[in-house]
Image (cartoon, rainbow, N blue to C red):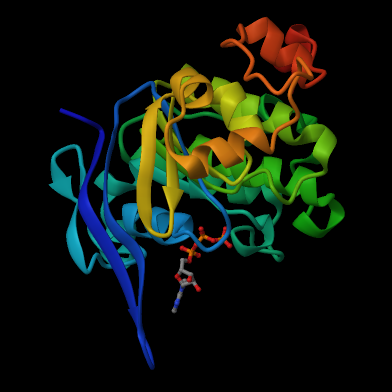
Length: 279
Ligand SMILES: Nc1ncnc2c1ncn2[C@@H]1O[C@H](COP(=O)(O)OP(=O)(O)OP(=O)(O)O)[C@@H](O)[C@H]1O
């Protein structure tokens, strides 16, 4: 059974006119798998993510987590079963409480894991895992940079020991130099705990670095999906080809590069593989 299964999902917003933001999307994610959802702004990625975590009610179709329908958010928060789904948003300020010390916020995640019978961990451990010193545990969010705050939001989500982590544009608010490293860190930490990761981004270059499978979304529909390297090297849909073509070509001849190795990917982003262990 898949960890997450989305079947023929539609999400509509009803105002003066009906906006069909997600239009018949199906996907599945297994434990230990990183699946990326890419597409331009407004194509429906956030609407899909919100439906996956129960923040949006499907107009059609279904979202099943471990074979059961995902309940709406209020019900989910009261049910220990569903604290095993965590979400990281683009803007860490929307998920961190400015009046609570970061260590206490990470402890909320730890408490959620404890309620599901997981062993106790300390907030300092999670800070160190996301590349921050344990000594910052008693500071408030305002004393950190935007990038550091996002690391704290990721630490809090991971401290809840999720089986499924849904990350909606988690790196787009970070400065360019740390985007790839934070994305790689999320992959590493999610997989270390055996979780599945749905990584949403408009940036195919970073997705190429971390995702096992990629789905390309265009105007509410998935127009292409498959192993990331196949989507990269053998994309069929013109929209995917335009996304791929927008990324600088390493060979300079207009040919798509062959599937890169992990070391090549790391080099492409100027990451020393050892450095990935430190972020
Ligand atoms: N609450 C809402 N009410 C009405 N329309 C909405 C609402 N939320 C999103 N939409 C519309 O649904 C469509 C998809 O939006 P969505 O935010 O899901 O896309 P996205 O790919 O995540 O874009 P972005 O990367 O800019 O967040 C857009 O046309 C958007 O204007």
